[in-house]
Length: 456
Image (cartoon, rainbow, N blue to C red; front, side, top):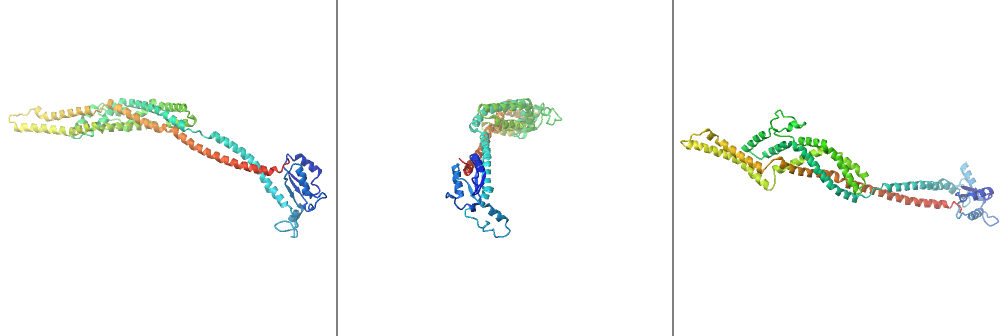
């Protein structure tokens, strides 16, 4: 409130009574107008402004804000048409010393308005900052590094067990096609042989796997026009994908959902918050696992095939020696038997070759081929029971790596993402704290500036 008086009326009874009633509840600033008439002291020896300041101090105003003005001079200054009333620096001429009308206008238009606006804004912003600090404290993610490590360790056994179970399911799906798999391995193994031995093995394989029905049982593989003949080649990727699709349709799709639930239950047991882990785990379980299983089966089968076709260690030595002998001995035996037959015909006078003598080189060749075939079957077997064990172990290892790579890193990845988020929240909290401190300083300054306008 602005209390305006002059040398005659600054103690006006009605105005002074209202002032006394409101002095502790309202902020007051005072104006002593007609300052040019107040330059002389009263009979008491005090000027009007000094007398007014003494009375205000008695009413609890230690440092009241008092402006001494000559308002009429400024009115004349604004409305004068000639330059007689104009002084220097945009001020009326003849102002008495200590006149403060311009300071009053500035305080009303700028100072007081700024203080009040700052006080209002400071109160509103303080409340907002308090709400922000509370929200940030509630939203700050916890430190999940230790629960993540425990959860990842707990998941290792679950994923290993699941890989072994899935491997068994997939191998059982391949069980009806063991003849086709043996056929495939045998054909790959025959690539090591040359000459007569290779031709004999190919002919033998045609008769042995004449009943192979791979193309008739897989809908995505074109059916052979001659179903009684074993296929010379077959699409391994298409075959394994069809088997994995069949296994997925039977049980693997349901196992993926169950696996996600098992992992979440284990994480909950390690005090890992499920509200941040459920969505990543369920998203991982909804991936295209059929294609992944098919690719894994192809990789495992190719690895086993590589191991059987190109072994290492003592098995490699046995295979190398056997292949060299099988590629050379049958031809040498046939040539030797043929030379012997020709020698007997040409050198023995009373030798008359019978049919058995003429067929003798062929029988020798056949016997040698059969002997090597038996040696190959004994030393380098390509039977499904032997392949199955190694294939299942290899498949379980591939599946475990696949599951570990997809699921095992999720707890730590989520914990790291939350740690980054927590750092951002902490940075925001520091900034909010800095703003709060600065705002408190501004509030103190504003309160200090306004405090003098109240009586005590």
